[in-house]
Image (cartoon, rainbow, N blue to C red; front, top):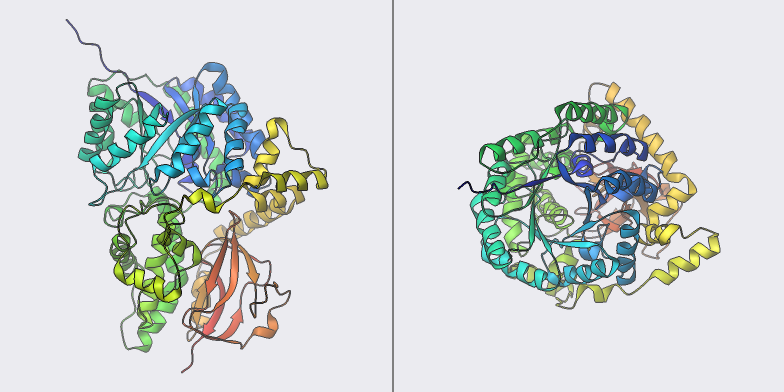
Amino acid sequence: MTTAKRKIQFSLLYRDMFQSSGKFQPRKDQLERIAPVIIKMGCFARVETNGGAFEQVNLLYGENPNQAVRAFTKPFNEVGIKTHMLDRGLNALRMFPVPADVRKLMYKVKHAQGVDITRIFCGLNDVRNIIPSIKYALEAGMTPQATLCITNSPIHTAEYYAAIADQLIEAGAPEICLKDMAGIGQPAMLGKLTKMIKDKHPEVIIEYHGHSGPGLSMASILEVCRNGADVIDTAIEPLSWGKVHPDVISVQSMLKHAGFDVPEINMEAYMEARKLTQEFIDDFLGYFMNPANKLMSSLLLGCGLPGGMMGSMMADLTGVMGAINNNRTAKGEAELSEDELLVKLFDEVAYVWPRVGYPPLVTPFSQYVKNIALMNLLTESMDKPRYTMMDNSIWGMILGKSGRLPGEVAPEIKELAKEKGFEFTDADPQSYYPDDLERFIKEMEENGWERGEDDEELFEFAMHETQYRDYKSGAAKKRFLADLQAAKDKAGASGMSLEEAAALKHAKADALVAPESGTVLWEIGGDGECVKSIEPFIGKEYKEGDFFCYIENTYGQILEVPAAMGGKLVEINAKQGAQVSKGDVVAYIQRGE
């Protein structure tokens, strides 16, 4: 008697392919063109159609994200292919927390727009940030896929994750996603975890999401499938592998030869989708993609950072490399090459991570840990102690305002918090963010703005306030076109970069760089007024720990830019309202002799 082969389904992460490769997403017209080709491929039971930062990106180049979601989901809905989205739990579709009434509205809107499944995750795996979203999704008619953010530490064992899965399934989640965002989940552990969940909850669907960065994901796919996984996330060329995801052709071949029942791939359609995707890249998306994201790196195993962060990390390194080497030269020490500095950064991440409580390194906590490490390297070059330069967002994570950290915070950081008068909390993170929809409803009425079909425009405004205003005013489109032209000009240029030229010009000054992309907001004197002209402040002296300006990032979050170890402001590169990219020099500050 022949035993039936176990069936494995595939999901295409079409939008996450771009998210892991660069800054922007395909336009609505491009999504409409690719959808029928994806369907024609015949091998996908699911397609990721929106979520995470995708909708903000539409707004950033002046396109309505609601129309894009409806257009992309429609053809898949018509043929019975499930659509799914990425949902950050307490943070919903952005990088910082969302009021409960806005979170509730999201599921009603997304269900009406044609999204079937919402993949709910918390970067800390705190069930308090996930369980409310499970309830909201079920009430709205969506399928909640509760998510485990996978990482590799002494704390993050199969038993640890299985206990969390039990709570999420009890709360009503019919599906579990193993989100291996850095691709560092060990195959043996993932196989064991899959079996533990399936043995106890055989009816629960398990989907595996693993980035290909350090090269473990193919082994992990085989292990989770052998232990009961049902759906595997995949990509297609020209955006598979690298820091993205394994290609569906390789995954299908491996599983087919391992004895699983997998769908066949229409290769003619695959090549058509490949060609169209390259066309989108050549059109405009490629100008905002970092070539490093096309490469895999075993170095990611050591630091555990998500592969998609490599590009931004390199930009950050470029921004501070000159300052670090200037400090080393002044002390008679040899300058560090980019590779040497990168290894030091990875080592510092590995040092910092357990001491801030082992937060899984996924957005936004991966950025926080990386920023701590990077600033520690800078302060080390200045002979200053670690943790000297940490902003409010980082402290919020450490203090528990985003949820419970998996591990204990190191005594030296607890002592530093005490010195600063900070208090640790175990309160429900949602309690810090009260309902806020009425404010947006009132303003839309005052402006004469339509709330949109199924209140989708109201939701978009409440979720992405800053970006929505810029979209409505046309400022976003104008800024994007200027950025695109600048990117094209830069791509055609050769020789020394602007950052390198600036480093030479200011050999005795520290470059103060933007921690994230966004708008520069100057605030001098602490009176709360953003100054219109900052030229009179050239020559102003700052003390260690002072903040000389703010960056409002593309997610509407306000970040403080510290004046390093203090000194005299000698040049300002970004005036009030200027748009800067992550790692761009905002100003130069020169310490006394």
